Image (cartoon, rainbow, N blue to C red; front, top):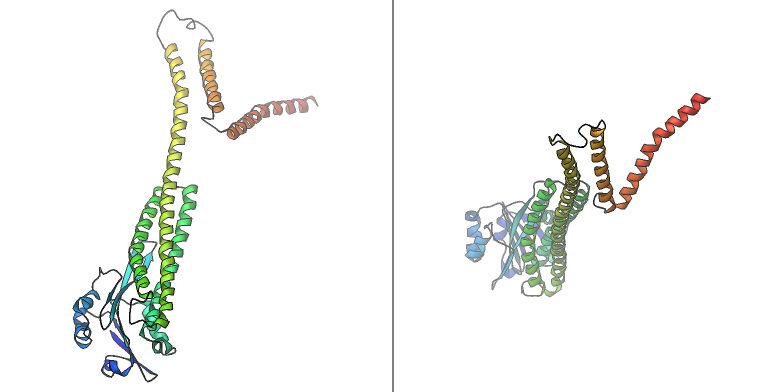
Length: 354
């Protein structure tokens, strides 16, 4: 679809290709041609023959791999921008390319997919002719301003997701969180790969390198550069936060594994002397001191319990099994467990005496 807006003697018209035939560059009329979803074969005669755009620039309009770029030509500037859309559920960055031909009296915007920023400005144009009256570069600024502002909600969504992931890591870490962080890091790298060239592009044209942007309108492109600079800085901050969150996850998992290993080591250390005692008493010798003793079995069990309790106390005092607060809490609960039956017996005896 090709749609055209023509500003002729303060009169704005919107229509199709017929408006291009009424436009001449020498007249001073302002022309905006928006090419949406058309194929290269359909628009090549218009771009290369009618307006004389370079064939490589026309080819870049339909190339999927073109990064944001700025190419100055004698009669026009060729620019490529990228609109970004991030799906945090499926973790994928979708980009829509916007190719622009900018001159004093005309602006061409070429894109293969529908773009909200283009549609918004096209709908505003009949009520706000200033978009074209101020020059084609001001119209381009209006489009880019809407396009760049759409980045900020994406950054906010990423910040919220990183914050939620950080909370979940310390509350209930799981391998799914690590997988989500890895995918989010990949998305941020893709955002950065497209955002940095776009920031450099805006820096170039805001410094006055484009002769088709009037000096009075450069301040608007400096504002766009400031926005893009904030976006790229935010992306870098979120990349660092994701990397730090991944390290925190690995540290939490390592600490959890250490606690498990420590607990298993303690129980293994307790069982070793018990196995030694059981092995000694399980030897089949005729002359052993406790073989014919009535209380030999009870003595062996008691010895095992005493060794296990001694080792538990030793580990607790060394803070290998519990911290000091945990040990005090254990002593308190143990005291209650021992004294509760005694109190119950005393109360029952008093009731029986009465």
